[in-house]
Figure 1 (cartoon, rainbow, N blue to C red):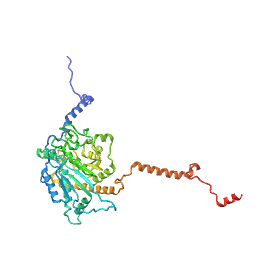
Figure 2: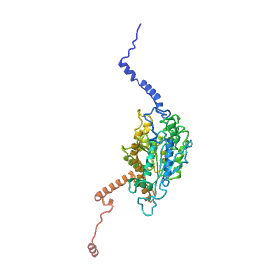
Figure 3: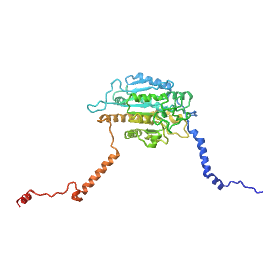
Figure 4: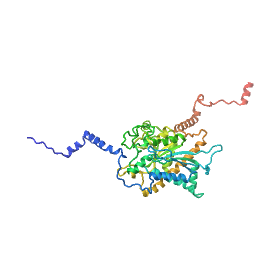
Length: 438
């Protein structure tokens, strides 16, 4: 009887492990078991590294109370609208910051005959329920703005407030997704991103809705909803941009430090689509990045991100409403990693919150400064729009200049018939007189 050995030598083991079919099987098994854990991150809570202290952070009740308090304290400069509501009837708190009293005069010069105009800006906070930090940065901004109203004449704070009230008509949506925020506070699930029904508002807008840069799975954190604008929370932004002619829209988020220009959707990536006002938007993004320490990354969404996002609010504002400026800004964070949980991914520790807020304040100052400068340029243009010369036109001018120089240099070497000014025989008056006499 023959006995077959089942010994497994290193050589045989190596050949087995290097078998292409086996490697393919292992790869598929890994993907099938790992992918579900990378999606639907907001379905279940995790054990957090730290939690929000509501003597430091605002909870939803405190958000409303603070907004009411500010509006009542400074009625000549702040007007609060609580008529915009979520699916469950919670206010989204639209605050307009402007010089309603007329007590602040325009500080910058304008040409005679031109009516001074303000840059109109719309800032949206709290689209994603788990991102507390952007909402806190809004209160920090308002603290700086209103602080200047009572500051001494000649102080930096007074000058800053005067500048903003003179040049900017600011609209703030304090918390676009109050139902989602309430869900986070009630369940202690700090991974929750969506509305009360789990819809990611930043995939629910009618711009390339339903593309692969979103999900149709209600258990996925990027669930887009049943249809574009299925969530009533979107209405506050679409209605405001219909009623008012905005120059700029910013969707404020956290989780990393990036500034996204339109577009971020899958179709735009396929077509390499760019916004009409790319040069000015890129200039603004660069200035915002330079104002931050360390600098933010900035660029077109589908180039800057490894993934696409279909149905975002800032793409909608750029692609459908055609606002001159539309950006999505990730204000804080170090990107996702295996060591991150949820709250710590999007929000700094309680003890570090104030420092982080101070660090992002220059972003707002740079934003308002550039937009007021840009708006003044528009007012000085006879047609209201200043077009930057394209690179193609500049190359054409350079080529024509080179050709002209070459032509001038070679002119005297050309045959007389090809010269622009053929050499002509010059006859003096004396010579003509002698020819007539002969």
